[in-house]
Image 1 (cartoon, one colour):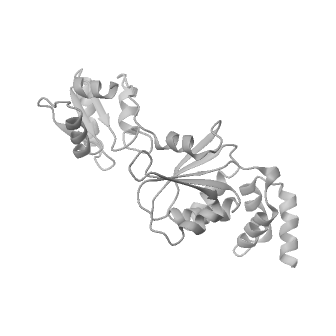
Image 2 (cartoon, helix red, strand yellow):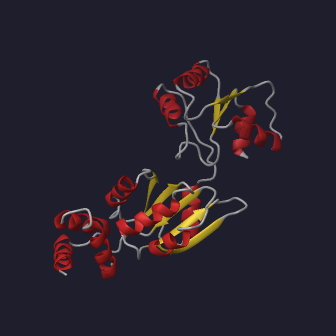
Image 3 (cartoon, one colour):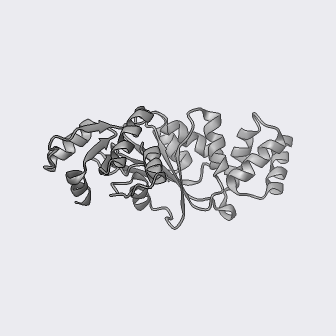
Length: 259
């Protein structure tokens, strides 16, 4: 209701997708009253932002809506919000749905601490490196992912973080075809390997549990890492990914090499 009041009273309205916002305003009976909808998205450039800031400088109020979900959370609007605040304009929020929070409430993983990593890199090696860098974060890991890459992402996560780590794949949250899948990274990777997935995806992975790490997962990760790395580099990478003791992992790697 607060958002509808804002749209009804704003002097200028901007949106990531003007067609979607126009449809929503029509549904809720909010008249434009001669106001135009200004498109502001990732490809708008500084020109549109300058126009909106100019309206604020004239004392007008500007309302901005993202396509789906809370603006500025993995959505356009960050630069507009920051620059408006920097020159002294009041910036406030009428929060919309948030896929991150919705996924956390459904996943069944701990929510006392979590880390939102956004979208991972497209390439396999860069993606695995990015996951290894946050593997030891003491909280639930949350990612956005493309439906075309989610199976590959789960496979790489199993290799980088350990296949036994619990994970949840949430699809199309709050929409008609909402779906939540739970299981280990290895199981989910296998389950989605040959499936065509559609919609918006959130992947959640449980926090590292150093004292409960499956030795088979450690050995599998070491064997995989040693295909392209030296024993020392593979040991350091796996130890960091699992939050395990480096010396223990190094000794395990030496034993695997001898075997």
